[in-house]
Length: 295
View 1 (cartoon, rainbow, N blue to C red):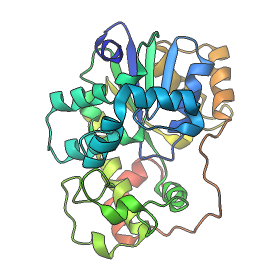
View 2 (view 1 turned 180 degrees about the vertical axis):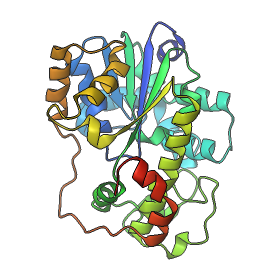
View 3 (view 1 turned 90 degrees about the horizontal axis):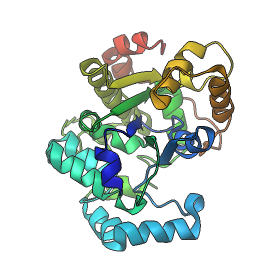
View 4 (view 1 turned 120 degrees about the vertical axis):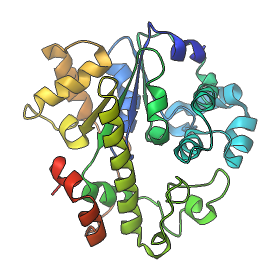
């Protein structure tokens, strides 16, 4: 059972967490194909009919049940996004968070692997909890805020067409200052770009602090470095891949990795919108932007 995977110290558990738009779909879908012994999955509590097909969708529904996938998720009592939002504002404790995490993954059933990899940007609120699991590691990915915001602007986040933003109640919520327990009176007057900038800053601050507090179990990488083709960032890609493999990768494994990241799953389409970062953002996060060379 999935419970055994999470609590078995013999199985390495790696969680890839970010603000989204950072190849989490690719890591969740393709690491399994590239490296034997790795079981990788992307957002396991989300039904993806296009990816899993009718059989996979039926299995997910049968395993979790319409009660958990539908009713409880709608109430905010199931689902990883709801879990992270509640944990971020300290509405539940660590043990309750871990129990919730496992319950949302029971439909995965028996998993035979050496390494379990979950790529899921919705785990942002439970990073310190994940590393309390035996033999676990969290990889955090940070992307340049200008291109990150640009990518999300092609989606519906925080627009009038985003039903989670419009409802903002029970289990239909996005990251907002109120929803993560950090009220900010400016939020209602923010443009979409400013809202996304606020979210980037909130996540980046948290990621940097979490990594500094537990560098042995939490790694932080720039998205641009670990997805760059060629040899310029070979050293960083080697370190990154070693987290999943549990050893320094051989050249043939690095070649497989480079081939894998040549794919782009869930890439955004459409015209890029120009992004001008607000003055308050560059002032507030100037040191952090400089630290990661996001000029």
